[in-house]
Amino acid sequence: MSSLQPVRGTQDLLPAQMRRHRAVVETARAIAARYGFEEMATPIFEFTEVFARPIGEATDIVAKEM
Image 1 (cartoon, rainbow, N blue to C red):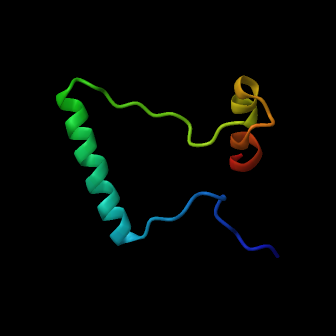
Image 2 (tube, helix red, strand yellow):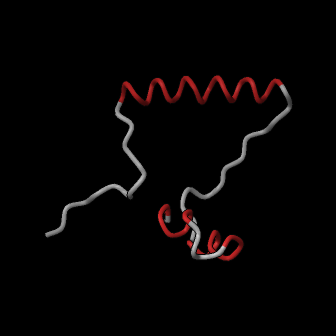
């Protein structure tokens, strides 16, 4: 039976880390709102082709990071 592993490059935020993370996010959100910016959400994961097509499959980004 295989054990579950987080996706490479991701990590869990435990309660203390999450409180700090939320404070940073809320501060950034409040500052952005003051300047008229609105919130949006984009996918967390994308297909490799999204990056490989415009920059080529032989780049470090695609070869190492993806």
